Image 1 (cartoon, rainbow, N blue to C red):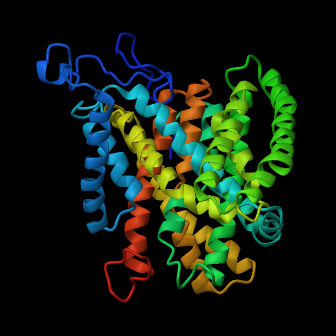
Image 2: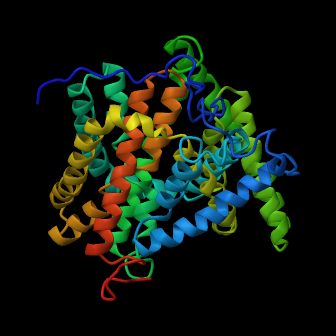
Length: 434
């Protein structure tokens, strides 16, 4: 394939769209589009709380779109993203007050990483390292090479090629686990392989997010990395000492009062997140460290289960905000590279995983099933693309390439998976498993 010149994808001046796009600095208000409520609209002007009306639109619409997604055998996050595209500023423009939605969406990511940290006890982490380290690292290098090569062929800069390759390396934890039958595979060998690889990939993704925090927005790269070297140990030490000598003793003292445990866990998550922000890190990284600090507690499993509904509530807002920030006008600029990269990853990931797993001694049938279940790009790719653009490490077009590729593989991989392997939402009765 000949190397093609890259089309410009930066925001033109005067467009009214902030270059940060999906961050808290983003202004989701393209010029020329009428807001759903304006001062000239007497009905909406009299509304007492437009935020409540926005939540009404989001969650009512999410219920409708989720119903359609379930009939189509698609993962629910896809429904929320499509809803954002449909009623957001680049669609019908029914929701334009995106700043509050964006802030609440970040809480969903905080809880997601907090719960992930709760599941990473030191003993389990060591078991994963022994079982899946070689497979995870080997496959990640190949997928990064595919992503970087495709981006280079379409004329992206070396830095953008590296970040595109890194972003498409990971597989989706949400799809991988949501479509894994809990009663038939979760505690069996196939499920153990999938969970081990996903958790190791999540750790790698966390490391990438940490690196992006160090590379962007703090002056030079050396200054950013130096700040990480200083602040990260401080945060880790505070989280360890605070959880061991204050939080866990309090929880054990009042462990019969569920409301207290619930409130204490939320307070701890937000406390470490705020401390991380004060030290120059992200809220999400702080939440992850706060979860890891509690992972050895006997109450960690209960905390994880009790916070899942709260996490899911805010994650709906997160996926909606991703769709709301997706400018369909950018599809023309990234359509061809998205199609090439998406198809290559959908074909390569199952076979690469199969090859590595067979090399590790797994049976071909199990190896192929694992590959298919991990054959999409991760939701972490969306986070990496957004954070990299916010920190001005990649351009707007490269960020949209990652996001569009992620959505394409989400849809295609999910549809093929439910037609071929046991899942809770399979079309065939013979493949449907709880």
